[in-house]
Amino acid sequence: MDSTTSLPTMAPPPGAPPAQTHRHSTHEWEMQKPTIEKLYIEEQQTLSDVMSIMRQEFGFVASCKQFKDRITKLGLDVKNMRGSSILAMGRARVRRKRYEAKDSAFRVNKKSVDEQKINRYLKRKGISEEMLLSMPSPVNREVVLA
Image (cartoon, rainbow, N blue to C red; front, top):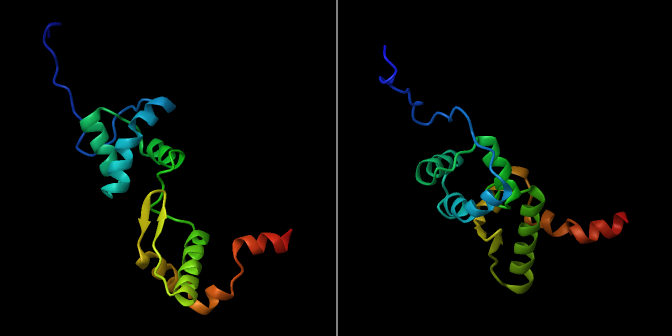
């Protein structure tokens, strides 16, 4: 075989992670933040879809762990909320409905929280409206413990 003949390169199968990922700087991640936010939050794309789009359309290659870590650091991890946050929203919703006859809408990191998500959490944990009203607020709990 002579040196001018090139061997065909084997491309990784579709969806397979690249052989080696580049370690991007904080500045590079910040430059990609609007695109990642648009795909992950606004368009509700899965993480693997975001990774694929970023690789194919923008040449931005990073591992799944790198994406997960940066999504958290960039404040974009809003698909999963803490139970304490959901309880606070549930408590506020019940109080406003009962005492002020108002409906409530909540946003976490620019993303609206679906009322069904709150209801599902409360049902799963077996928490009634009365229990929500009788719970101490986080501010009061800190004052009591201090």
